[in-house]
Structure formats: C-alpha cells, structure tokens
Image 1 (tube, one colour):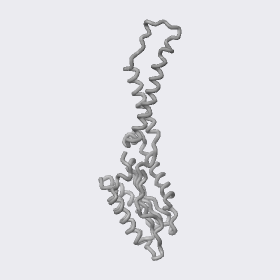
Image 2 (tube, one colour):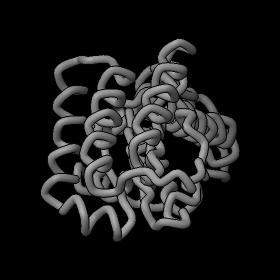
Image 3 (tube, one colour):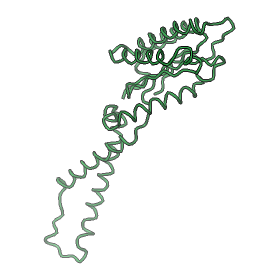
Image 4 (spheres, helix red, strand yellow):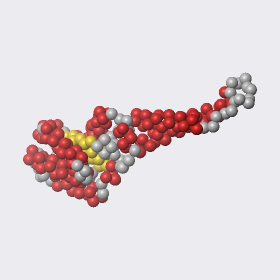
Length: 229
C-alpha cells in the first residue's frame, strides 16, 4: 500500500507550503494541510482475510497431505498417538495461513476495503481528522481560526474541519462545498498536490474577506504539508 508521503514529490510539498503561506498572507486564519495513508487499522478485515486463508490452507492440507496407513497396525490407542504429528502439522498450517492472510491484508489496501463497511471507513476518517485537529493544535490558535484540510488515501475520503469562528463566518454549506470540490478533484484523477492547492487558494480567498489579516497577526502553525504514513 502506497504511503501518504509517496503521493507527493518534494517539489509538490514545497508548492503546497507556498500556497498555504500565500493564503495566510491575506487572512488571520491558520490553514493546515494533512494527508494520511489510512485513517484506521481495520483489524476486523485483517482477521476475516486471515481466517479465509487459514481455512483454505486447512482444506488443502486435508486433501493433499499423505494419510497414515492404519490398516496394518493394531493399537489400543485408537490411532491418536499416530495421528499426533499430522494434527500438529494441520494446526500449525492453519495458524501460518491466518498470519499470512492478515499480513497480506495489512499491505494490500483494496483487500481491507473489500471486507470493511463503507460506514466504518467514513467514521474512521472523521475520527482521525478530529484527532489531528487537536493533535496539530489547529483548534488552539489565538484567533480561534484554524482550518484543517485532510485527505485519507486508503478510504479515498477528505474532510475539512474548522474552528467555530470560521464555521460561523463561512457557513457549513461553504465548508461542505470546499470539501466536495476537493473530493471531486481527486476523483477526476488530479494529483493530490494540485487538488489541495486549489482548495487552499479558494479557502484563502474566502477567508481574506471574512477574516482579513492584521499587521499584528503571527504565523502560529507550520505551513508544511503533514504526511501521516
């Protein structure tokens, strides 16, 4: 699975940072662009795939492994001791199959998505964006004017979070429109860099009218793209 940082060249990262700096030169708002490889672990999907691979291995072992010939040997142990090595081999094969399946699912994004409900992925993206909003101190600017632009590549979803002041000034419909434009741009196979820059520039233009920059305003947060691999 391609990591978030691998979706951007160094030049593109620099261009995003410059776009943020230019937008913030016109407004008191603090704009934070963030890209994540995935918003959740999705352990259940890994467990399901691991179980499926484990069952496939078990069936193959039972069908193709050589069977013990018990017809020429009389024993009062009912063959349990004779079967012990085979049973241990079968159990070990199932465990190995489960581990391989889980490891494969962890590396192949579309397999995770195949076994994960869309509603769960949506919730995970929102939760991750909310966590980043606080971890990156976007919520803690002096003017209460932080704006987070978040892309999660595995789920192919985007979120825009804002402080209450920006939400009140811009309005939810405008924020949702910006988010829709971002996802539409990515859906049209535009590069993540170009898609982000377009939204940063539009957000900066809108915020410049509502929250114009004051000479006393300071740049409180980094302008750099944050990649969470």
